[in-house]
Structures are given as structure tokens and as C-alpha cells.
Length: 237
Figure 1 (cartoon, rainbow, N blue to C red):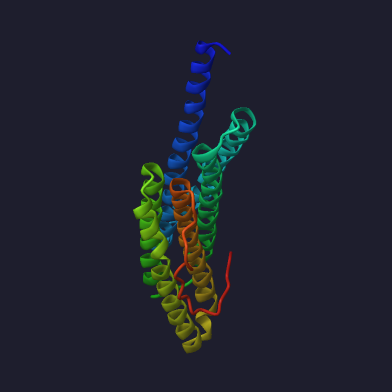
Figure 2 (figure 1 turned 45 degrees about the horizontal axis):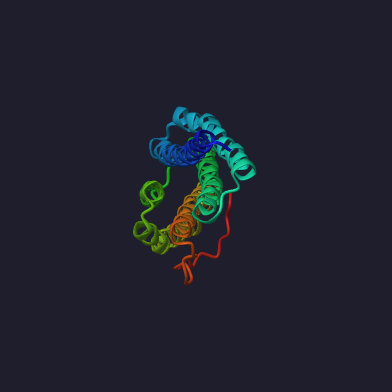
């Protein structure tokens, strides 16, 4: 290979790695916005916004597909090693986590449409606080990915318990409403699912923090992730 050809190959390879990086940053912003809009739709009972969240999920899916396609190409043609290999694999993992966050936002939007026909519960305030916290974590973890900030990534990883605390408190409050009046059971059940969806989005944010740490350090975050969720519920949808 001539010196000119080698230089061109290096520039093309660098461009592909940069494209992967930039796609994840954009995808992270999209996923964060999707969750924020879904929570906002719930807060305001805005059915139109909930429908837009559901429709916009395709944009995140397109980004996920683009990352998958480019990752396969880079692995097949460039045979990355060491730091570059961690970057490529980390990008693929981060894309999967963000795609799931967007899916969870759609779940929240769908249940918002159902809740709009039911009496509003006071416990919605707990969900809004959870949504704000997880939204902040998503914003920070995208920044940590963009800047390779392992310190920030570790901070996010250790904040998982804050979301779990709020989720447990929310479930206790909702159970109280259900016991007080059986007519609240339907609304509270939907809110429980929404709360669990938001809590799961927080888990995905901490998963991305682990990815960032490994990409930069070349080793996993050690220790058990702090989790104190005492809820007996395991709701996923």
C-alpha cells in the first residue's frame, strides 16, 4: 500500500469512528428528549404529545440501525484493536441501551393515553420527580460519553440508588391509595408501570456509565452497583 493510500485509509477510519461517536451523542439526546416529553405529556394530560412520542420512536430506531450497520463495517474492514475496539464495542452497547430508553418512553406515552380517561392521582408528583432525576442522569451520561469523563460516569453509576429510593416511595404511596379506595386500582396500576419504566430508564443510564468507564479505562467498574429498591414489584411494561 502506498503512503497516500495508507493516509487515506487512516482518514477514512478516523471518520468512521467519529461518525459512530457523533451518532451516539445525537441518539442520546433523542432518547433523553423522548423520555422528557413522555413525562411532560403525563403531567399535562397531553394526548397529542404522547402520540408524538410514539411516532418519534422511529428516529431513535433509525439511529440504532445506523450504529449497527457502521459497527459491522468497521469490524469487518478495519479490524480495530485495543482502545479502538473498546470504542466500537462500547458504541454498540450504548446504542442498545439508548434504544431501550426510547422504548420505555413510548410505554409511558401509551399509558398516559389510557390515564387521560381516568381521574388524576396525587401520586403523579412522585413520577415527575423521578422523571426529572432520570432525565438529568441521561443528560450527564451522554456528556460523559461525549467527553470520555470517567469521573462523571462513576458519579452517575452511584446515583442509581436515588432512583430506586423514589420508586419505592412511589409504590408505597400508590398502594396506600389502592387500599383506601378500590376505585383507584386501575389508575394506580398504570402509574406503577410508568414508575417502573422510568426506574428502568435510570438503570440504562447507569449501564451506559459502565460502558463509558470501560471504554476509557479498559476495565470494568468494580463493586456492586448501589441498589436499594425495596419494592416487591417487577414491572417491565
